[in-house]
Image 1 (cartoon, one colour):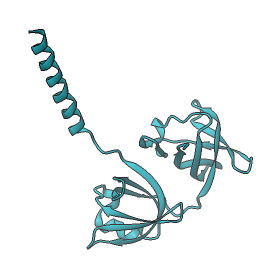
Image 2 (image 1 turned 180 degrees about the vertical axis):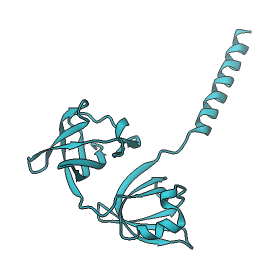
Image 3 (image 1 turned 180 degrees about the horizontal axis):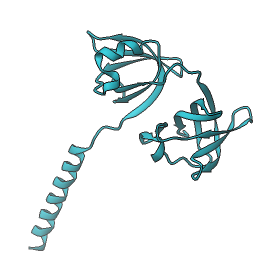
Amino acid sequence: MLNGMLKTFIFVACLELSSIAGTAQEVVHALTGTVSSIDTSAKTIMVYTDNRSAGLFQDKTTSASSATGNRLVMKGKYSIIFYIGGDVRAAVRVLSLGSGPFVKDSGTIIILDDKEHSLTIKGDSGAIKSINLTPDTVAETEYGAVQGSKYRPHKGDQVRITSHTVNGSATALFINTLVAN
């Protein structure tokens, strides 16, 4: 009897785990780059990413900011591309960052100030720079893209930051938290 109950328990547990795995959502990632072309008939978007490579994305965008009529004005714009997938990536949202100018910094986080919503990095050249975070900041982490108010960096994290100046202060638009190999 005990053996039969154990088999039933294991069977039910396996069913529960398979139903959880079946309902899991894909992780949304983000990157920055310049939209170089949009092919509405092939439903693809070509982006020159910050690492100087061309990235082709299947166009699965649904947000109002990237509806077909509005996407054409994004050609040539520096943008955040939100996507799912690995080898075949599908763009689920494209957010234009405007005309700039943009500043790109990379380095190590040395100070976190939760009260002021800022972080300070020591750049690769040794320069120290404080950068403000806003709820509109987007951060790409090892777990996917997160909103600025949900970004939880750690002292010592390696980051690449795209920012612009707001009221005389550097304000992060996009943060890429680099995963150590």
